[in-house]
Length: 213
Image 1 (cartoon, helix red, strand yellow):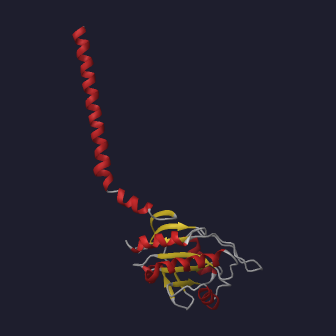
Image 2 (cartoon, rainbow, N blue to C red; image 1 turned 60 degrees about the vertical axis):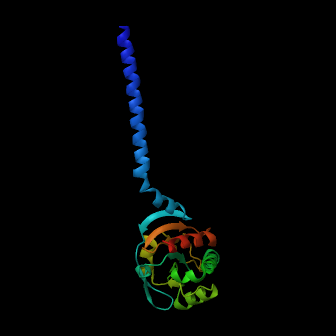
């Protein structure tokens, strides 16, 4: 009985040791060869400021800009895009957003010409060719800037596809709407989302990363 108990004890120790070795080997394999393919993408995404949107294809649309040209999102493939939602008679948030975008683009220097900034109107009645051209001029937004306007029926599907809510303008001309600044990469995929608290440095940092991809 004594020899049998000792043998059983030794076998148990050997079995446990083998199990530990197998678990260590499996863990090393999964974190070595298996993890190597996913780490770079994760690291790249984490370098972006704002809310990480992964790489969701951005919904396309076709609207006229402030000069009457038909603009589609897909025409900007090959360039990062800043997509925002504004209205020209906004008394507070929209002018501030425009100023921060202007500062962002200034910080990019000559690279700003390789970025498109697209603003979709939140005020079908108040935003006209004249008011949007004036808005772009006042805020010193260059030829990289496209202010898209249209009727309620033309604009509402774009708002919905980007989860932006809008209420009709009040008697004072105020339009209550949610704030969203989408950062879209060269392939037309949504990569990051900001609200109106973003800083020019944060947005510029994302654009520099996307310009380098």
